[in-house]
Image (cartoon, rainbow, N blue to C red; front, side):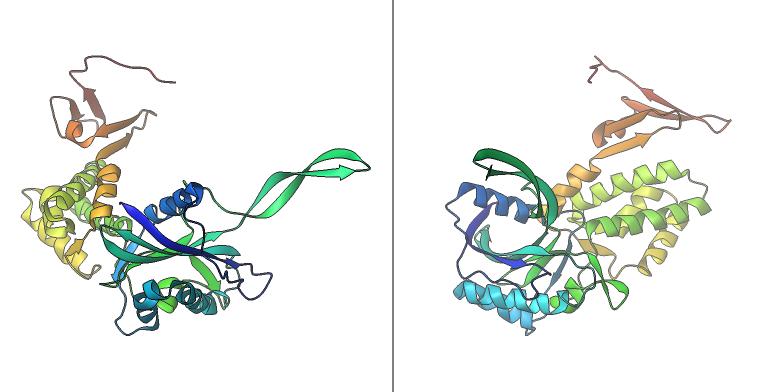
Length: 334
């Protein structure tokens, strides 16, 4: 991502106050610390856990997003008011600061709303006690997470196309835990996240593999390879590509996998955005193995796929040997 911040504002949502405290001035984006903080938060909105979708044309949120670049301060307040009208109904949703940000990425305008929850932290207070300098330790109740930590919730919408990335949490409403941000605030059903899609693929692959006596560890490793291959080739999680990779020459297993997964996903081909593709490469580009004897290995995918470098041998007694081959040197790290 190449984020260029144009305007940003922070509104205070202290549940103890009741109503939000709306700022009447923008944040100073000439301050490098503020720029870095907001930029990192925006970048971390895109992850394997983030969901994607498109706002409903004509919805209240879509209307606000479209006019936000032209009347940013006023519309930022209206966006937060719409969100807070739902949020305040929760019994356990915490106090937070909310940032509304207008930015550009690849010459496209975006509006983001990011919620950063308060955390308790300790700091010092320099005071005077009977004429003597006094350094005291105090508890601060409204500490925000650092720039390297993602926002607790939020969304970013491309203004022209109304497509979005979203992260949401479950809070209690009338005694029931629920995700409210997509269903009640932006009123748009998102597509499952990359992580959710991969979990579904893994669950069904293991179920089918069990019927065809394929070892579980082989299936899990094959799923990672298949997901990475599918994203590289199709820029999507393509269940047909994945079925052929996992079950190779077993056509019956491929058919059963595709039939079963069709019952749980809306489409056999689930697109993955460019930003998430980069995350997928980092996340699924390595195999992480934990052996029953306590040994743990992290193996790059190209090494894992090369029998000249690593080999798995199945023995008649059910045990497995892992052979690491052609190693030029071993580096020990503390």
